[in-house]
Amino acid sequence: MKSKIKNQRSKILGFTMIELLIVIAVLGVLAVAVLSAINPLEQINRGRDTGSRSDSEQILSAVERFYTIQQYYPWMEAADDTDQFDWGSLMTSVTRATGGALIVDVLAAVGSEEIKQSFADRLKDVKYELFAYKKLGTENSPYICFSPKSASF
Image (tube, rainbow, N blue to C red):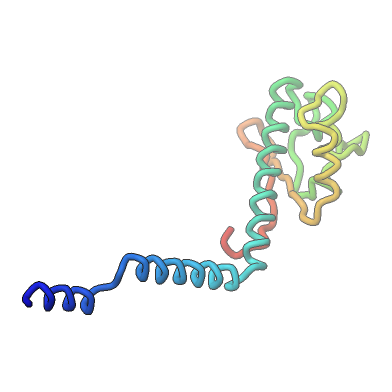
């Protein structure tokens, strides 16, 4: 008699493992649905910003490699030119003084080939712009920046 009462009590007081797994699965599905519905545009913008940051890092690395090999920056014609330039769009306004070639084209040109031409072409076609700046002097570094679209960057 005691064992019969004990079995009934254990059935009443607890949940089965299957019930717990079902509840956890339902909560997981609801959590994913809520997180994806919160702000999908922010997620898209965050992805674009990540791409912009990666492109900025690649261009900056290419500029530094170009300088290491050539002993002048890609916006300069020769080593005795000024190494400074003010803020400008890397895709439209940062050019060599005399040739007028875009920096990304100089980095992709035969002889330097610091970036691939397909990468340079893609950078010129993207919806965002990268901006470049370099203060006068060898102690100052060039900067490649972008304007973030997401709030989290």
